[in-house]
Length: 116
Image (cartoon, rainbow, N blue to C red):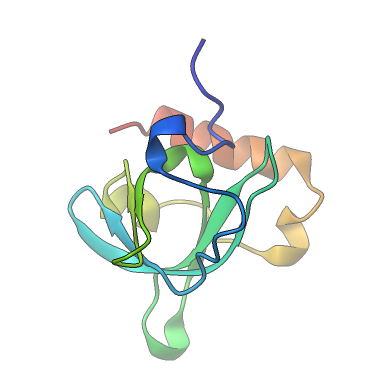
């Protein structure tokens, strides 16, 4: 059985309690942004990534299952999606996401169907 899209893969190097806010995010084809916030909740872990520039920022939710490796020394998180896949993802809206299982399911399906 495969790992859940909402849990960090065991090979990612993730350790609970590490503060990931501010870490750079590297897609398969280059840098995509920085972590704004994150959750380590089992079964619903995610990163909120700021992929915008200046005041035109866009935030997207990346399920923890997209993380392939965390380089704590270099403060970089590597993910298994392209920049275009991440840019095309539904925009993160805290009011809509928190406590909304339908939206989490929609985002999970989006990233599950857009594998590298």
